[in-house]
Length: 299
Image: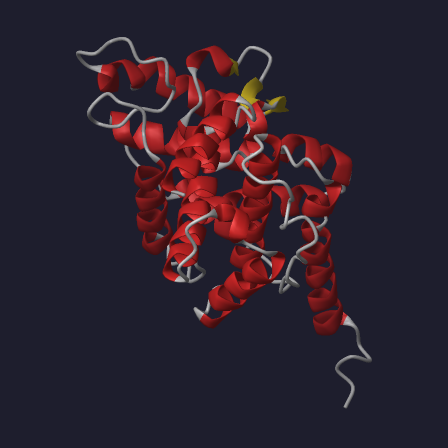
């Protein structure tokens, strides 16, 4: 069954044209699934039934995995079994009718506008790394980029005279995102006064944001920078790169931007994914109402 994983990886890369990170996530899920089947003495994928898949999902639940992670694992398993069917490794797609577990609706962490300003203003100094960090933070909040999209951004993707950036998102889908004047100014300052100093000997990198060795910055590298800055300015919330993406979307929605436009900028395929921000916005409305309405205070 291990050979099937190799074949599946190739299918995701060549047929589905999935991103490197997407392929890694799906293969990781399927490797765990195959390991489970082998532990249950399965030697042939044709012997697996829908009940076995349901048992695996129950096993993940007993391992304290969240319903969101279980749902993602099932999505990978469904994709895998569809591949097996298409390539005629099996005669029946046993995953087709397996039910997706109910997902707990947990609202993502969002920073207030005041907290975002604190974070963005926490970067001080005119050295190359400080200018880079300032540009990364301003850009990700100005555009709602995923951290992988930020790290993979190329010079050719920037259209600063028009204040636009071109992004290749999930499933190799391209989108054009506007950015504000200040983000464009900070980014231009980084490109002119810092990037060439970070580029160093290699001199051939097309990536926008470089680390101190001249290679493009990693997601882990950006996460460390963000954690240090949020700690520096006293933000108590759990801040991740996705927090800035959530904050971008929520603040636009609260400012009256149409949900469909936010969906386009975020690169969400389904509007239902974007609708989580309406819940966040309504929560703020309720909080303001509770603290402001005179009868709410009347005991």
